[in-house]
Amino acid sequence: MTAAAAEPSSIPTSVDFTDTVGDFYHLDSNLDGYEQATVDGKFALWAGDASNDGQIILSGQGNDVNPIFNAVTGASGNNLGLPSYIYVGYHAEDIDLGGSAIFTGQYNDVNTIFNAIATHPRNH
Image 1 (cartoon, one colour):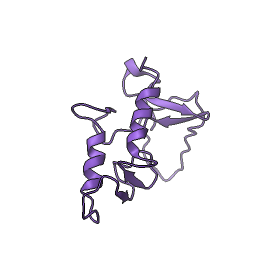
Image 2 (spheres, rainbow, N blue to C red; image 1 turned 180 degrees about the horizontal axis):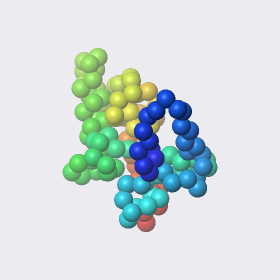
Image 3 (cartoon, rainbow, N blue to C red; image 1 turned 90 degrees about the vertical axis):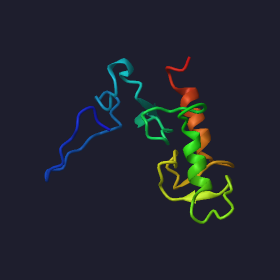
Image 4 (cartoon, one colour; image 1 turned 120 degrees about the vertical axis):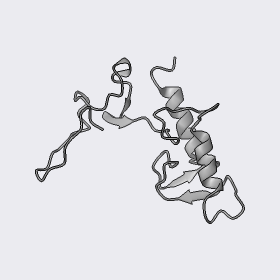
């Protein structure tokens, strides 16, 4: 995401997200620079907003874990409603963009939410 909207045109425009000096997405001046993470010298957005409310919450009201549980247990094909079912596809609940939403087990998306919150620079 960029700091300002980029209007689509017939002339290609390049945005180099590996340039960590550039001015990219800023949600709020109070969070300036904390909206994105730097991973291996490249910008990345914080993962974890399964509820699409602009926040990442692990537990309590409005958390982002429940949408993953609901999507996985309610997925067509998950006839038994198992939380260990792997809901294949790029869904909003696929937090790590691994191609599936996973609630329990190895590579689950809940751990990605936990790690994003635990490692955020404002969580001290």
